[in-house]
Image 1: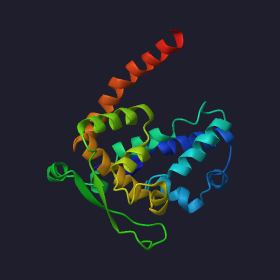
Image 2: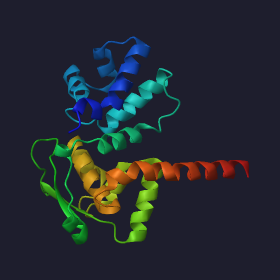
Image 3: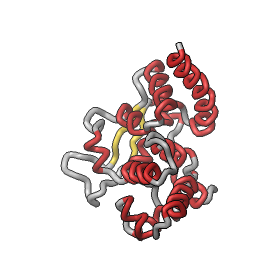
Image 4: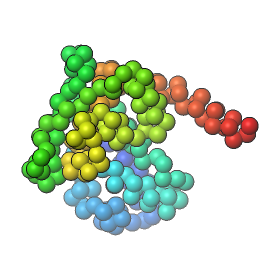
Length: 213
């Protein structure tokens, strides 16, 4: 089983680098990210993944500190975290789920109780056909936006950013994991890194060709 400290190492390295570069205390780092000291502690020990808002603020702080040139890399951390999730935290999608084209996923809401009109289990479904799944896969490799694939795989009732704002970060990662398994296959963790490397070079070359053509 993978150590939680290792699964969150990329995020921790970024925090440590920002702290060393700016000379700020952990409390000051937390203030810049909108986090309390206890929240930073929970993130450091891998208790839960950083939210998209935290990743965005961290990226902005890195740009300001001269550690990063752009704000386009925050999506990568979410993908890295999901790839390295330990088995006991993974959402298990079976061959039967894939055959059925759907999987019920338990979600928890930030408010502590489910809002009126929402359920505590949400149906995640596979893309409507292989061509649609292929498009989602290519888009994911290009921009690594997990939110997009989650919204595509949720029932219309739940397919909105308003719903995603209601659930806690772990529930979002659970939905993302089920969406990936139903879109790419149950062995997506083994296939994704190699596939990402395989497509990135041609895409970059094509973009360069357009600029120079």
